[in-house]
Length: 82
Ligand code: HEM
Image 1 (spheres, rainbow, N blue to C red):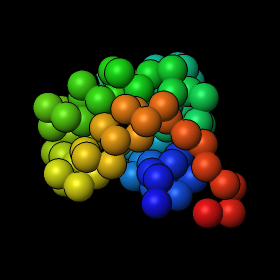
Image 2 (image 1 turned 180 degrees about the vertical axis):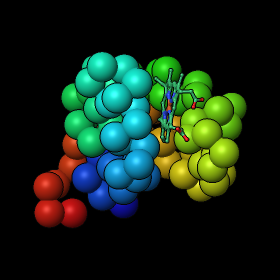
Image 3 (image 1 turned 45 degrees about the vertical axis):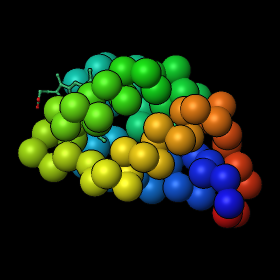
């Protein structure tokens, strides 16, 4: 099954991640918003791949792989009820 925003990626951002990054960026990086994550995907990838984000709680290899695959397949939205 293809990795989509709705079936995989949005679950990888916690409420803590979402609120902190909104606060730090003055509401421009919204990790609960598909369009925002698409816009920032390259920078998000750099941060999570090198383990800087989320601070002290880096993504697992599986989560990194999910995000990279999603980027490389055109960042599909998927079904809302997936
Ligand atoms: C565009 C990419 C990103 C940039 C440039 C960025 C930058 C930053 C900076 C400068 C801080 C404050 C300093 C720090 O605590 O180290 C911060 C905090 C934080 N970031 Fe990011 N971040 C990015 C993406 C992300 C992503 C993708 C996540 C989650 C997967 C995330 C989760 C957090 C959290 C949870 C904090 C608060 C840490 C705390 O206060 O304990 N960030 N980010």
